[in-house]
Amino acid sequence: MLRFETAGESHGECLVATLQGLPAGIPISLEAVNRELWRRQQGYGRGGRMKIETDRAEIVAGVRHSHTIGSPVAILIRNKDWENWTEALPVEDIDGAEDKRKPVTRPRPGHADLAGAIKYGFHDARYILERASARETTARVALGAIAKALLGEFSIHVLSHVIAVGPVRLERAAAWEELVDLSLRNEVLLRCVDSATEARMKEVVDEAYRTGDTVGGVFEVVAHGAPVGLGSHVAWDTRLDGRLAQAIVSMQAVKGVEVGFAAEGAASFGSKVQDTIHYNKDAHRFTRGANRAGGLEGGMTNGQDVLVRGMLKPISTLRRPLESVDLVTREPAAAAYERSDVCVVPAAGVIGEAMVAIVLAQAFLEKFGGDSLSETRRNFESYLEQVRNF
Ligand SMILES: Cc1cc2nc3c(=O)[nH]c(=O)nc-3n(C[C@H](O)[C@H](O)[C@H](O)COP(=O)(O)O)c2cc1C
Image 1: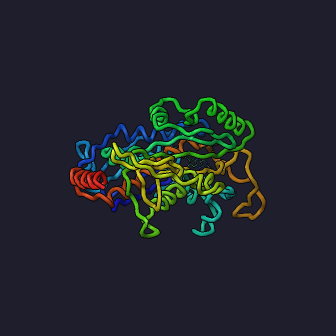
Image 2 (image 1 turned 180 degrees about the horizontal axis):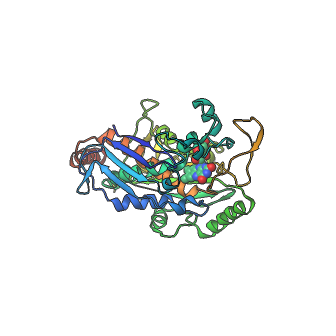
Image 3 (image 1 turned 90 degrees about the vertical axis):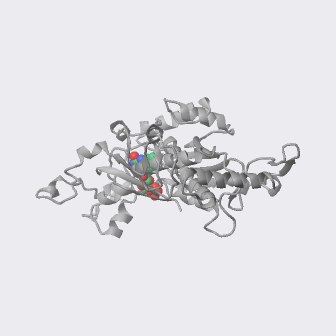
């Protein structure tokens, strides 16, 4: 079982991530991990924080001589901003520490601030927002890069693109090659494959900047090359669509998930929605008329591209703050403002890739197992042989 955990707060010393259950022998490139971290920091609409941080992963366990060794992988990512918070958030209480705090007593609607303060018994939402912050996703992306390294050994690749920002939507399908091109770009705007649509998306973000507002959108993650049969129909918690949905909705600000063309399907007739089945006798393989199911039927991959979309609400911290109430005085007050992003849909796509890669890697190792990459490969190839001979 591939298990992952993260720890760390937004303005603490560092983020920490662990991943346990990987076979030995997976080639790991620190450069590839850092490239993913860089991709997470890009996109038009990010706030000042991204200018402070240039995230770098330090792998401190589980990888030696550029390969996994079978033991848990541990990754550390330092918060550059920590130097500005050492007195506000010290580990040990020291004399005078009280005066150095940066309390948040005016909870922001749409954040964990109020529910977390009540639940954990703080009259300051600082400790809550420190962990609820999407800074935590940096750790997920680092682990996602490791999961991608495993999947890549089996020619399974996971990428994403932005299909909507506010009301502006990409009105055509994107080819896999377009996603590859996007992922190789060193200048990132909104990570949309269509430049005219991307320009209109940018106008929406500009309007949000102008008016002190924020904007959400939709990203699509595509997993290319997954074999038929990851996940299973036999139980609610083995169904891969459900597991992917949880992984995506667990992301900060993601409020909805769609597998394939779910929303469109719900508004259509069955004859228009299901992907017809065909057989190519020369190639000895089944083919499908379309991929509206998003590569998942009965909770299993069906050999087509896996398509999962995440819907992000607009960012909750507004420069033009919303109404709130002070936790101490109980008087009406404008919600707190702390340097914040205006649009994060491109970054969310990268985080979505990491989550999909981790869940696919889990399902992959459940099916093929192995303590070493060569053992996993033998199991995988023997299964492919079975599929070929079906
Ligand atoms: C990449 C990314 C960056 C984010 N940046 C901010 C931000 O700068 N300010 C903010 O208020 N919320 C930001 N959020 C959203 C909050 O983290 C999220 O809304 C909050 O933790 C409450 O969780 P919920 O929206 O899932 O209920 C970001 C989310 C993501 C995915």
